[in-house]
Amino acid sequence: MIVIFAAVMGAYLARAPWKVYREQRSHANELLAQAQTDEMQQTSLEKRDSDLKSPIGREKLAREHGYLKQGETPVGADTP
View 1 (cartoon, rainbow, N blue to C red):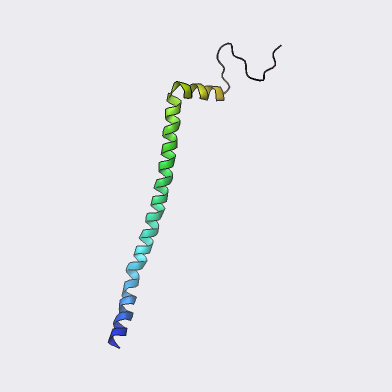
View 2: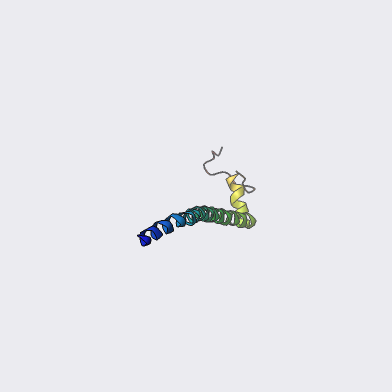
């Protein structure tokens, strides 16, 4: 009888630490997911920054905005 009472009391007293553990674990998982998202975004921004600093990247960006080199005509343009 004493053993059963001790087991029940032990389980009752142990529920609070397990609740705290579950809350902290959930919070840690959220922070980990946010860190991974931030890291992917940072990597993407660093790649874009390095592309924009290179001559080829700047030319690509200019062409995406419709700029042409002197004497070039757009592909598919009607020539008179």
